[in-house]
Structures are given as structure tokens and as C-alpha cells.
Length: 327
Image: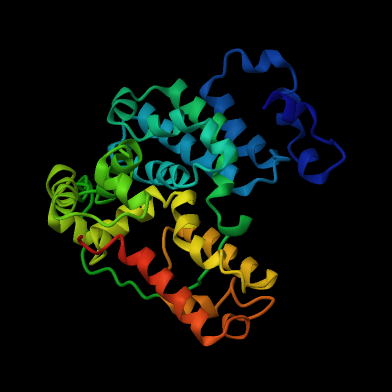
């Protein structure tokens, strides 16, 4: 704040209108002991002149979020105990992008934020460390580096009841269940069932029962699972979180690639399919092969004859079914 005040241009109209306050807070000594009146002047007169050269909007919003949490903790507001959902959600999204080097380097701190111990401690210095070290990572959550377009809706919300002075109890935070599932899968990738899903190996009945016990008893209930993930099969959900190993994806398409009749354009197309499967764990529907990013420079239908199209479709289906089918 001192640097900001000292760098203000007195020739600007907005600054000259508040010259008395600007001059008051130019010396460093003005900040040694702030009275309530001084604090009011800073908030109402100086704060509006403050500027930030940082153009990283997601990072600045993260700053605002963490500062709000710190204030809630200092003032012992009831909202503090329910406010963890948003930062924990952000940490969960960052964990899904662990392949990004900057995120991988901060993974221990990211995982710490989602623990009960972190929130129980309510350590302001820990909050500040999180803000400083993770603010630059928030931009990776925004798709393609750009924010989604805002959707503006005009809703009429009439007041049907008024009840003042009563603290509202927080509803159950279902986001916690999703976070637990993601954390468990990432921390237990050496589990046999999860290894099979990552290596594109069909599950046995025992493997399925293990996953069912973990997802609907150990981490939560069947209702929790259905609420968060609907009818998504256990295997597909775990595969989506744990990711398919690149070697397993390559092995699934190896025979097709080794076909001596494939030309360079066809090989490039297949490798694009492999990259997609590695990133997304499977292809939801084979019709995706006719859509971006597979439609350029040539479409699936033009690149391959009917026989090769059928073979490639069978492989794509098999990769997905191996996460669902019980062997």
C-alpha cells in the first residue's frame, strides 16, 4: 500500500481530489500505528485509487477468495466452516491436471488444502502461503486459457418470507464426496482394480465388488454416488480419474498401426485417437471420430475404407468396454 500511495500521480484529478489523504499516507511512518480513523480513510479514500498491474484475472480472483476466507476466520464468522467448498473444488480441479509441470511441483501443497487438518488449524500464514504459491496455477483451470462466456439471465425472485437474526445451517456439502473419490483414486493407484483399469485390462467380479465397496460404503453411500456421478459405471469413473496409461493405449492400437497398408495420413489420425484416449481415458461414442479434433485435415470416412473403419471402431469400443465389462 505504501508503494502504491507513493507512486500516485498528483496531476490526476482523482488523486488531487484526495490530496490530503494521499499526503497523509505517503510517509512510511503513517502505517506504524493505524487508528480506526486512519483505517477508515484508507478504505474510503485511498483504496479506490489503488491499482494492480497484474493482468492474471483468475489469480486476482483467487487472491480475493483467500483474503475473504482469512477475514471470515479472523472474525469467527459461521461462513468460515462452509467456505472451504470453493477452494477445495479448485484444488480438486488442479489435481486433475497433474501432468502440467507447474501443478505437479505444487502437488503436496494442493493436497494439503483439502485436508481437515488444514481447515481445523485455520492458520492465517498457511492461507497466505497457499495464496502466494498457487495463485498462478488457477489459470490452468480455465479451458483453453480463456474464461467461458458469461450467461446473463433475468430472473424474478419474489420475497415470500423474511426471517432476520437467525444463522442458517449449512446443507450437507456433497462436493466433499467427489473430492474424497478423486483423492482416493489418485492415492491408491497401486490397487489391483485401479491398475487394471489404467492398463486396459477387464475387471473380474471380485475387482468390481472391491470398487463398489470403496465407492458406496467406504467413501460414502450409494445415494452419494448417484447424486454426484449418476449412472456412470464404477470402472468408467475410476478410469476417468486415474487415466489410461499411454503404453496401454498404444498397445490397444498397435496391431492396427502395424498394418503395412496404412499411409502417413492414416497413421497420424490413429495417433491422434491414441492421444485423445490417453487424455480422456476412453471415447464416449464412436461418432466422436467424425467430429473435432478428428475431422481435420481429412475426415474419418475419407481416410479409411469400410473395413479399416470397422476395425478402428471395434478397438475404440473395446477400450471403453474393458472398463465396464466384467471378465
